[in-house]
Image 1 (cartoon, rainbow, N blue to C red):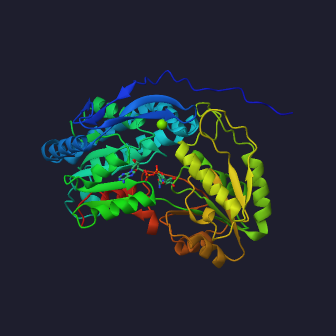
Image 2: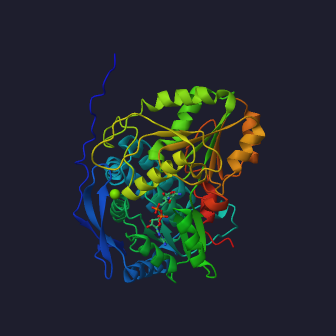
Image 3: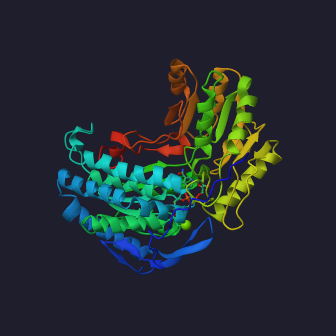
Length: 478
Ligand code: NAI
Ligand code: MG
């Protein structure tokens, strides 16, 4: 007997959408001077949610000027223990307004409410709490007796974890005494603007945090602005390289958190049930829109068929659909552009000889959707084994010896993340030593904590976010 789930929709009325939003500069919302506007849609329904300002050069200049003034007059001179109070206040307000933030994140991004409610928003609060605790202890962070902030930080973030990436950027920067100009991604600006309201509610002095919405042009203005002392970017490797070229030869500090092609390596002695859950969490969590996703499964040949069989059975139980339904596991793809990219790259895999299996789930008529998919018979030269897909598509490779697992895992220009599944602790440690990646998980995947540093090497970027290490990105330690 097959039991159907009853619908379990999360009510939306907690969110009050305005028809249009301005820029958050110097503590106030204002219309752009020389900017335009853009629409943000709900990717699960294609409904327009709101019109949002797209900041022009003069607007970016206003934001940077406000941030500079706040750095010189209020936030910079303020003792760390006072800054901490504001950060604790933001953290508590995020908790108080968690449901509102979670619903808005799901509306604007398309991710399941279960994830925004249980992962994104709690981690946002945790980040502010964690860095609030550092604000008055910077001299004990291991960067000398009186570490100095950098000044004004320009921060550009992507659309996959909109509010969480804002928290990863703002919390350490503010704790260290910098002021910020944050540019959210064009498809997901709404939770950052709600955070702006929270920042007002917390009485943070004007100009300490400025939020300029817009697309890549606004981002570029921010990168090129002379008044910015530091750029922190999370997004594609392509744009990361452009930014690196643009700041080369200037005195601007830079950290980049870019793409990845993470290897999730499963040995034959692994606890298979847990490994299956880890594979699912590695690549189907957040529709695969995860820079550290385990998009390459590298599984020992002796168990490969069994693992793939079980994985297929498990994927058929994942529920794809309305992201606001509390039972939904797989939400909408964030934009038509991203859907095209996933579709094109998957098709290239099949052309190059891979075999496709997709979960036979029905896709809704409206919105942007892609079913959980497995590509087998993938070889290392295929594009699907090399390029970031940023979608719910797993490429499967096999290995016989440990050495082969290492060389296949490392055969990528990226170096963000990897996972190792085995019963032997000694093997996890040995593998962690061999794998070229910034983050390595043992018998788990996609696990995040504000006290744990996160970041890449090689084409995945440089600099760390989270933990004591995350402070270094916002302190003058050169
Ligand atoms: P993107 O790198 O273009 O966008 C990220 C952010 O950078 C957005 O806020 C965007 O407005 C801004 N931006 C774009 N061009 C800029 C420029 N020239 N100067 C300054 N800021 C700029 O990424 P996009 O186009 O949204 O996604 C393309 C691919 O990038 C995805 O398919 C995925 O593979 C990868 N990606 C990786 C992310 C990660 O977390 N590693 C996040 C987002 C995308
Ligand atoms: Mg949107």
